[in-house]
Image 1 (cartoon, one colour):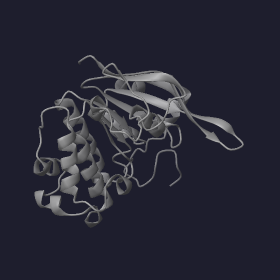
Image 2 (cartoon, one colour):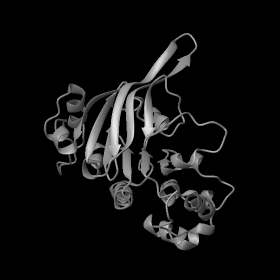
Image 3 (cartoon, helix red, strand yellow):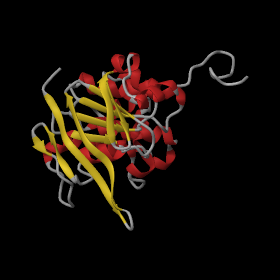
Length: 263
């Protein structure tokens, strides 16, 4: 494993809401990520996972704390061009409908990632489409010509095209068919690890996180309540919330019912 790429120290993020004052979404979070490491971030909807990811990209301002990427402070993005070193942070958003430009071909959008790369280009557009199980001819099509799951795979290809040092997947497999979710999650891990990049994989699917992550952080109400190697957290969880999450994972018993439910 290489040196630390990402360091978060006592990060707090929140929003001002009329009548409520400052509402905290991320509360005093400290995390680290090294090259080649895959960290799974899990927790219920609304616990602050996406806000944390957006803050790493500079899309959310910090109330307190610091974020550094390869020693460079990550500040809130402005209308100016993104600092070149921070292009090496790429994020796959949950909603591919909003993250792709409907007026441009998908090939041209993937090519944007290739051109933005701060490292030597490893891919062609055709190779990237093939990696996410689409055809080279699909490069000439527009986003509306694809299903939601296909759009998400295109978004993944575009992010990987920039040869990032840190790839963030914010519920990146949620819109995919069940048969593809684990496969695409493993693909994201492989593409990141083979290039020495770190992967922050945010998901509510704990079963997938267990398969692809090295470490896992469990978030509840903006706080990291448990963090450690996947095997340790799964086999010997210490926090009651983690225990409840793990107990809620569906287990197929072959009878058409879930264990503990009435037939």
